[in-house]
Image (cartoon, rainbow, N blue to C red; front, side, top):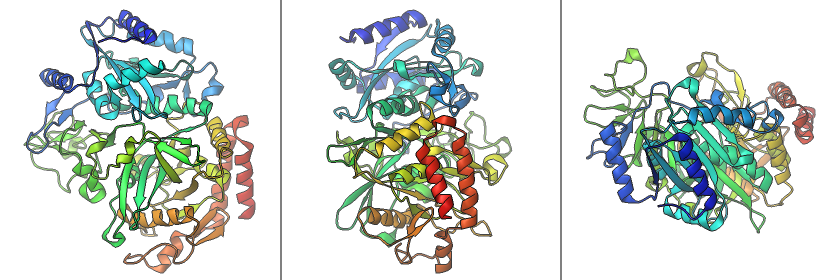
Length: 581
């Protein structure tokens, strides 16, 4: 297999001459190819077969202990000037970055096969989808990209029709953390990653292409590449409204994407389009339409259980790749949160007999990779070339106090301000320092491919494209009382909040004005059958003016930190809210 695309053929030859592989394999995506890769990885020990009766077609991969997570401090945006990347990104000049990686890629694939993976991010026939080609020497990466993207022959055919593709070069190298870099060259449509086999560092279609490179091009081309789930809410009348939502880590993003309506919400259904990334364009009808560029889930395993996300548990019983989870004595995957007690005879993620004194059985960032088609709430609209229409955009963070359960922005500009000020507070379990506010604008701080303040300006510019754009909201599932107990039940009951959000988008649903936005009036949220008293609800929807004055001052200081690039409109929003308070 080869290609008729001259640029692709030349690049593959260039990489082969640099990395010196023993063989080159063009990935076609066939079942036979998959079976052979699995046979090879089982023989080499890269994969361990799981119990074929409980988890058919499923495997465990154990990373090098030094290679178990994204490495933000080794992730760079390589633009001509540091100002273009912005201070929230690590920057390296392109010439310096190329020189550094070229020396690391030199001969890096000796005694290995070089795999050429053509892939499409998004439905293969979607005008909003993008093509890429990842070159890698990792069979684990090939098998994961098979689940996470539309890859192989159909992708190559689209590349050959259209000519354009994002280049991604990856090599495991020697897995030395001191020789590990993830470089992004947005003006060259190029990603280079060396020294890591971990998901986000090695599956280059995911964060690298679908967010860092795509966000750069989205600004140029007038659309949005966002770290957002996409979920549809179907009411008893059969009407479905789609929302996109962005949350920093540990804020329930995947759980919301796969929400299961509780018994109290009879007749409602939830349809999952995506749990992580949304590409959103303004359509000819003026509405915003979104596709999920991914074809699978690369999800965090710990904390995923039947009580928190039954759909996720149900989709993991076949054809799944698990990374750095524990292994039971009968060959089943296990992680903290899957059951209340650890089974006897566990082997931990390092391959050692599990002992509680030696840390967690599964690595805290252990993962599962699975096709989205296996999700019980999978939405066939995920394959619609034009995407799905977005009624609401929702931002949220983990705030134990101050921030109401839900509020609506006054307009698009105010909504951008709300997104730009998204924050979560740390817990003792996370850092040892409780209550430290960490701002993660639009949940994009680690993933924006250019200056964050310019990214806000792009969001503001999108507001002029149509008067039919989604309404913007903020939610906070994590309010606590004085005894540090959660005041809102969360999980499936969050559907009650989503219903109010959809009501607001449809022009009804009670709301009262406050300086920070519109909050539900008494009775506007359906609380029937819910064990939350009126005093608690009043507190959940209250706006503490003194507390919010302090919050606004902190946000103002944060915005000022981006210097002259900070849009004047966001500073004006900050002053407006302060004055109203």
